[in-house]
Image 1 (cartoon, helix red, strand yellow):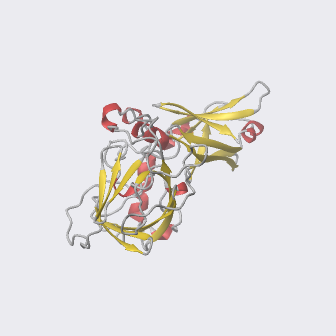
Image 2: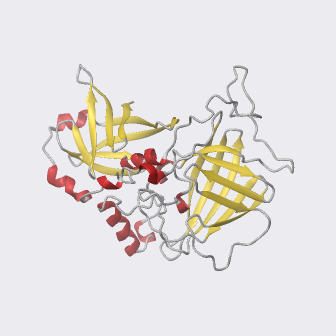
Image 3: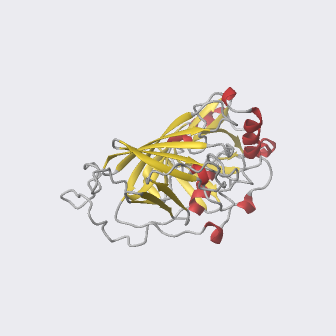
Length: 351
């Protein structure tokens, strides 16, 4: 399936994991409320040298930037060839996506809302372990970034403390990866700066600044929030072992228009509204889906992206080859929608 909009969920489901390993083993050393639940609003812990301790298992919430990390940029801020490449990748249904190809995420490491990451902190080094068996090393020993790095998937990272904020500089990314799940490109000149602050025990804020002067006219910053996951462990997953997506990546996004049928305006209007989606691997995070109407057709807004819904019948629509079905109860009231993917149907209840 396609690594953007709702079919991006299929990629994540393939690339996700089930929080089932040692599921009944309480995480030691965390504050708890009288009923035994983790007290995620307790003060952030500190290491023996007084620095904030970022250790733990975290999931990321990048909001609308998951699919479009350039959402706040203006059209003129992107080189025309790069914008054309981004649009072509969408038209081609993401066939060449590194995510469906089971390659490391590269500079999109903070955008995945499903995968859990374990941070392990020492005074001289922070290691970030991902469930797909990739890792990051953030060196805190005073070394500088390499002057002429051999480009790699995950890049090279060094960090220092600015008060209670960890500042991480990363460079040396190869061009095989994408900036986001929508397909924005980057060059080997990409530099990422993260300002990481553990707000309290269960929440971490990240200001991520991206700079790539070969493609984008100016640096820009996006906010990312991380939530601590307790009483479980990360679980190994190997994407290529059960990859189901690429065989479905056929045709073009524009093929939808050739299949469309006419649907009465009153039927279309009955589907307009807000729907709430939860990734099975991270049900605590509610992701809204906004179905709106524009120019006589429905628009599907998900993960910061908006796509027209082309009707295939009175109840089933297509967004770049991905079926969405609206479901009603016995009174004809719309209760939820179903997004169909190779890994199974995904339901979003109407709010």
